[in-house]
Length: 149
Figure 1 (cartoon, helix red, strand yellow):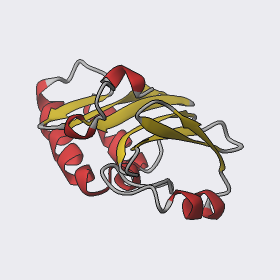
Figure 2 (cartoon, one colour):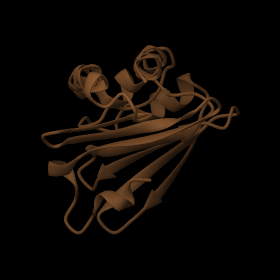
Figure 3 (cartoon, one colour):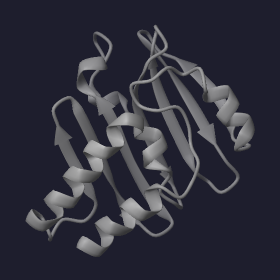
């Protein structure tokens, strides 16, 4: 278990990604061009989803409020994306909690952390990783965590 969690943290800093959780979506277009990802935007009632895909099968969804703040991200693909980029200023909190909880929950695969308003769930196996992260205090009115897929 500890090896798996350490692998998540090591892989998490290796690949470039998108705008950070809790920040604005202003950098999405720049990141899309830089990393050659395709982007599609889907509008929902109280938020938008920026769907980014690449040729390797990685899909990253960024959920943004009407005011342009990223309140959630989800990912799925053959590799774990750069969680330090996706989580931004929240990555240190996630990393510290994963390392401390790995001693407690050695039987569980993946990483699930609940720290204040930050929820991060990440897991999978080689070539099929998935996860999501969101800020509970930033969820738009009427939007639940189930929307972050």
